[in-house]
Amino acid sequence: MIKQYLSYALGAFGHDAFYATLNTYFAIFVTSALFVGKGSAAEAGIVTTMVVVIRLIEIAFDPMIGGMVDNTDTKMGKFKPWLLAGAIVSSVGLILMFSSLFGLADSNTSIYFLVFGIVFVIMDIFYSFKDISFWSMLPALSVDTKVRNKFGTVGRFGSTLGSQGVIIVVTPLVIYFSQQFSGTHGSTQTRAGWLGFATVIGLVSLLGALATFFGTKEQKSLIRENTERTRFRDVFKVIGENDQLMWLGLSYLLFALSYVVTNSLLIYYFRYVIGNAAAYSVIGVVTAILGIVSVPLFPIIVSKITRRGVYVGGICMMLVGYILFNFAGDSTIMMYIADAIFFFPYPMIFLAALMTITDSVEYGQWKNGTRNESVTLSVRPLIDKLAGAFSTGIVVIAAVHAGMTGNAKPSDITAHGMFIFHSFIFYMPMILLVVAALIYQFKVTLSEKRHAEIVKKLESKLETEKVEEEAEEKADSTN
Image 1 (spheres, rainbow, N blue to C red):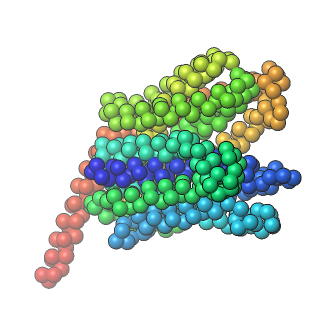
Image 2: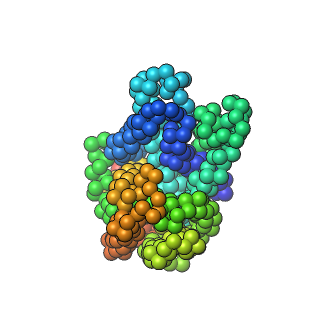
Image 3: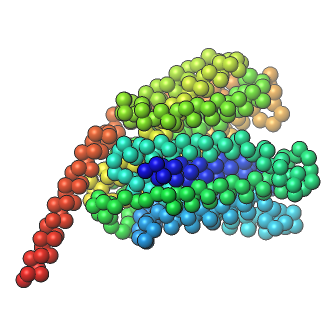
């Protein structure tokens, strides 16, 4: 099992290194290196708008992608073909995105926009296949909740190292490749530097996927054999009929939205409230260390207080962080302390939600008679994308209405503008978190104990059906 845990962690490492590169550093590449000179702002705006619109549209296709994965039946299993294909195509797509597309960005921007749109759509679709197939493997690796917790924990640990590792290596890699291929010294703005960086991350993502491909094994069982093909027209029905998945999904959406909005607006706080934007970088160091500490604690804590205790208790701890945020004022130290308390439970709450979604596979099978692994697990990336899309709009609205745009200085922000900003960064997310906790506490009844009972009922039912079928076949053969 150690080999499987390590292989899954390596896959998560590469997967989230890719995710962080795409969602954080592509915009920096576009605005700082791809388009320069007159008209560069408008051209960068077109590219980023295309990315947002395409990703919003693509969200609706995630459950269908999950259905395609569920309907896959090969000697390699249902997940590995999509994991490998998704890793190869998305890695190539990432490298192309961090380039000028063979000079089109300079020679013909109209053609560049067209080609970029095609490349991004293909890349994003195959990334979704990889994302869904990777995390959908959890219910296939084991039906035992404790084993699933371990796989989820090592996966989240690997993803934390991957996403935070990108923050550490991005500048050194861009500088190194800039010097090697452009002859510049110390610049982080060259296309060659960013292309080299993207190539390294693409390779890391592919190698991580290969580790998972060769190092993990789907578990064979009667429960997993009880699977029917999912029609595309039924994928949303599968999700809608699983009440535990729906309630958990609603709670997790509110939780994710509150976290992403606050996290995205923190840099504005350091710039316009504290007046020291450079101090924000320490937040990355703090969260990286806390993430590495927090994730391995999950199996220990969840064994003592259950997932419900982790989820609801973790939200209560985040609310304490919000209270400290509100009293921080312009104190950098207080902001660091508040952010540490705010962030520490986040990875564990994520894991509690992921494990509950994973267990809802058997719940849906027990309730509706069919097993849908990938369709069910596609809900998590769908919610993350939805929260990310909503937060982008909320962040822009907050910045504009608070007056935190352009060359504005901290002294330019009015009391009314500061109230609006605090409402978006602290007050609204706090309300969302409270509602998320209440929904989980009173509506999500799929505990570890109940899941174990459901698994036993499924195994007993399927074993009985198998014995009856064998008896019928034997009777037919004798007649």
